[in-house]
Image (cartoon, rainbow, N blue to C red):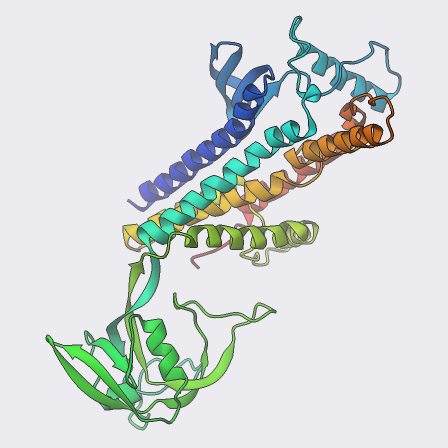
Length: 436
């Protein structure tokens, strides 16, 4: 059964990845067609063709390797002058120009990408990443507002019998260990918190904040038990505890360390439940993910070095290190196979898919060819040159010939292939461990 669930998790992520890639390419396809550009192909995957069908002037299909996708637009670059090139780099440029020329059909010379205005070219190239961002916002909105975020409720799940020092390995109470304030006050599992110190509470985070702010102070705690309200008197003790957020996760400081402070403590835990959040929470979660992924990509060379070191030394990988498709699928399988409620596993899988789309959004905006960000930079440079010429009443310049950047593009492509190869090997040999 565990193996079956593992496979289900991988299949779920593969389908989600295919949907993400497909929508990314639709983000390019739709504006390109709206602006009159001839699109010859819309393909999901690379390598040998598995299936395709021509509808109108565009061939739609799937290829064997689900590692990305592409659309083939007519005239990404200006047509070549037909001169033969000499030298390896010049030959690369000429080959790129020849391949580009083949996309320009006779009679459709005006339906080429490079002739579009700057803003139209930016819209076409930005459309793919934006589709991933939109999909991520939808996923996080479903998670936050549809299913809800797991938070502590006002229902008490358990009461600690004694006070144990923070960080201790002790798990059972000894006869001389002091009782917790909650146990002394008579709090029982199943009690529903109504108010603390005269302040009504609607969730456990509010109750925790009131308790933590009142070490040594006697508080009246109103609970609902068996359909009637009872008032209990509790005095929080001062204790060093890791501060937590509304979801029960440890709060971190600027250095990523858990925040420990001396706060009021009574020794009770709440039941967890998925609580729907306001409709804008999903967009906020997506924005937070954009910031986190951007910081990862900004330090990508260092992180890749760390992955390489951990691969050869066998040391434990950083949970925030980059992943390949293999790593993402492996994590999805582990999540699906864990011994947890189905809804909790589904939430984690959806969250993983949302984060994957954020990664696609941010990564594709890196301003280097052959990524979308590189094409956007070329379009902006072309627009700036034309605006400069108009400002000084000069003849419009020739379109920017981005094929001159093919040698740099090849170098970037080789580096990307090397990066993915490193990550795939690391994800097989020394994967990230979420569930030791």
